[in-house]
Length: 77
Length: 556
Image (cartoon, rainbow over all chains, first blue to last red; front, top):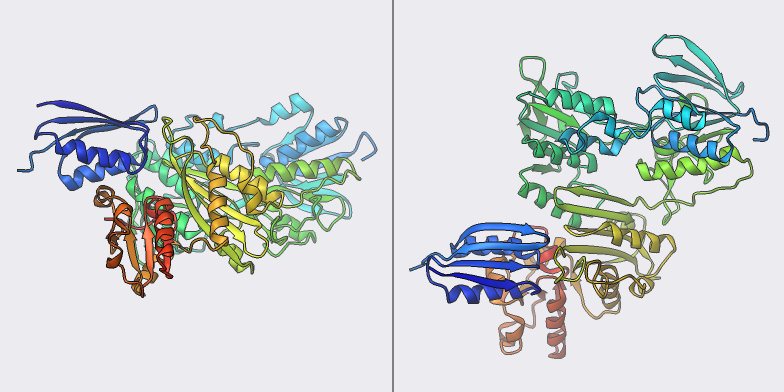
């Protein structure tokens, strides 16, 4: 079980969500993805993404204008 | 006023009355100034009342700007609270005032009189109105009554009748207290002065925050819960259970005193005044919520009962009350307003698209999203600018700006531009301050103006999100040109996805005979897609204005 940090700060649409798709593919079930983004639209996107991909959103918070999310990759097999 | 013993009498002691009293004294400290008000409190922050309910403002005294004795100590202005003006005798220049404590009537002579009688909350003649737990919110006393009722009570479900700014602020504050709030609005959307394509975003936001929003519904009465208190609100869409109700269906000007002594009312029902705030009777002026305003764009009478106008008109009236030939004038106002409901901020100035069309203007509109500051700077948030421009001379007639970012700066820029009669080209070229923590290199306001110029030059055809369904029902195809991942996360029902990078290789999938509408996140990539297809000879191509960011309906 690995933890991966993904820096999406400074990326604009569609940057953060594309990056997330890519990184998620290289993760195994149970891995934790920790993401930071400054694109505030990402807050809604990430919640919707988790819902649709059935990955688990462990936490989603905003700190000093930065969106910080922790996602647990769920084994889809 | 030449003599030092001149008497200025002011009826009303909230915003306009106290502003005028203080300004008049500063213009001429030898005046004998008296303010009479039937209320207990003077100079209070009426706009702060919803936040007092919600506990953002903890104590009643925080709402009180000044106490009656402050005026006497600071400026020698006499304030008689709990004194009700009963009648004006213009020929004798006397006002009959009742001391509400002693019950005695007093004749108060004046040389100049200012009516600042304000407005009162409108209570429609609804069946069951007399039941308990039905509130209005206009004065500090009203607010304390509601707050006291809620403290330690088991009132858990509120129905707020009226989806204007105050009603929605109340809904927010009740929600913050853990109360389930339902808002009922008679108009087709909340915030009726705003356009629907803007207001629907607020409805979506309210629902996300747990507030139920019902629009296009009328209230006919209230039912008794068996204890003489409201149990449900009866509407055209059925009964809605309520532990308590708040009536917030707007205000009406207090004009009875003026009407009885022969002062003319205007077409809006408020007191008619000229630009110096004089009524038709010599030496009687009116200011604040009881008086009419002139709309700066149409030149027609309007009524904008707002604290900002009350202070402005109070000040203008004071200068003219003191100096007979002062000639201080207020040319008109734009109805500029701003509101924050939960995390969403909405601001408006000038005419809405709806009002502009109703006033006979031929207009063009755009919806343009932008970050409020550099996208990479932490705290950057999206705002959407709606511009309304007159087609024939490109004059900006109105604007609405909304989003989670800073909206008051752009709306104030636009209010300034409109006041000075600016064209959209002039707005596009304004030299505005930029550094990443504050703005974007081309500000959101100039960006919106540039998009408008492109549209007016025919560089693209736009579809307002409100009209999208009708266009799709008529056969237009909505092509989302965002990347697959974005489309996967959120899309407009009925759209197809062809990423911009694949557009040229997949162009055969598009039917040239049908209308094509491009969609992306904010509209920019759609514009690029449109330009690509135009070069291939596609004629009927347009873009969804503001993209998915400005789309106010449900996505999937």
